[in-house]
Image 1 (tube, rainbow, N blue to C red):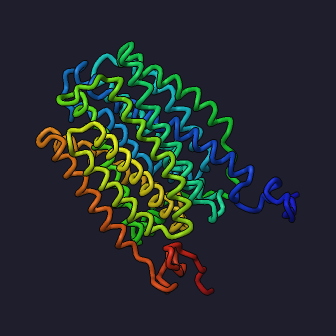
Image 2: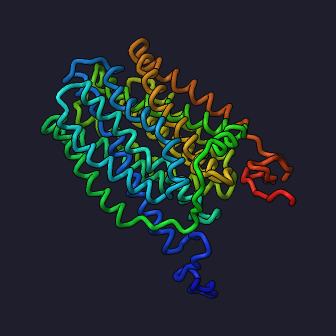
Image 3: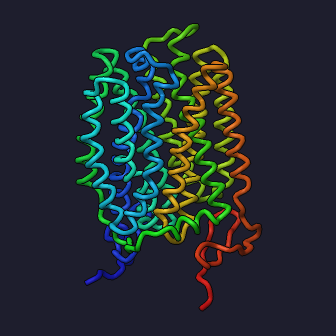
Length: 433
C-alpha cells in the first residue's frame, strides 16, 4: 500500500514514494552521496594516467602527444560507448547498468600496473573506457528521473563535484606514489582505492522509483539532435572539455621544464585546483536554478577564458591563479550545460545525456590530442590560443541556445509545446488531444 503524503513539519523526514526527491529530504541526501562516490570511482579510473604522462613518456620513450593517448583512448572509447549503454539503460534500468559497469571497470584497473609495454597499456586503457561508460552515461538521466526539478540543478552540481574530487584523487594519488615507488605502484594504489569505493557505491545507490522501461531505438537520438538548442549544448560540452583536458595534459610538461623545473610530486599538486570545481559546481547549479541557465553559462565560459590567459606569464603564482580561475569557470559551465540538457529533455533522457557525454568525451579525446600538437609546435602560448579559441566557440554556441523572450511559446520535443521563461527553464505542456 502506498503511503499518504505527510503534512506539517515532518514532511521532509517521511517522503511520499509517489514524489521525486526534494531538496533537504533523506532520499536526496542518499542519492547525492551515492553518485558522489560514483563520480569518485569513475574519474579516478578515467584520469589516473594524466598526472603520470611525463613519467610514462620517459619510461616508454614516447612523445607527449603519444603519451596522451593513455588519456585520449580511454575517453574516446567511453564516448563511443555512452550512446549504446544509455540505450541499454532505457531497457534494463538505470541502477542495473551503473552497478554492472562499475563492477567490470574496477578489475580492469587492477590489470593496468601489470602491462609490460606501451601498446598493452594503451589497449587496456581503451577497454577500460568502454567499461567506465555506464556511470556517466546514465547518472544524469537517473537524477532527472528521481530528483524533483526544483532540486535538479543542485543535485547535478553535487554529482559533478564528486567527479572533480575523483579527478583530483586520480591525479594526486598516483603522482605521489610514483615519486616514491614508480608509476606501476602509483597506478596499483589507485586501482585498489577504486575497488573499495565501488563496493561503497553498490551499498549506497537507491533503486529507481520513477524509471519506466522502454524499447531502445534511434527515435530519441533523432529527436534530441533535431532540437537546435540541444545541438548547441552538445557543442558547448565538446569544446569545453577539449580546452580543459588540453590544459591539464600539457601543463605538467611545462612545469617540469625550464624555467620552472619542478619535481613530479610538486607538479601533481596543480591538480588541487580541481577543488575549485568541487565548490563551483553545486553553486553554479543552484544559481542557474534561480537566475537562469544561459546567464550563468555565459559568465562561466568568460571566467574560464580569463583564467587561461592568466597562465601565460612564466610566473608560478600567475599560473596557479589562472589555473584556479579557469577550473572554476569550466566546472561551473559544465554543470549548467549538462543540467540544461537533462531539464530540456522530456523523453529518452538517457539518450539526451548520452549525446552530451558523447560530445564531451569526444572533445577530451580528439581535442586533447590536438592540443598536444599546439603544445609541441608553439609551446604554452599556442596552447593558450587554442584553448581561448575553443572557449570562444562555447560562448557563441551558448548565446544561440534559443529562449523565447517574455514567455513566448516554441516547439518542444516529441510534439509538446514548451513555454520558456526569462530564466531559460523550459516548462512543458502536453499537446492537445
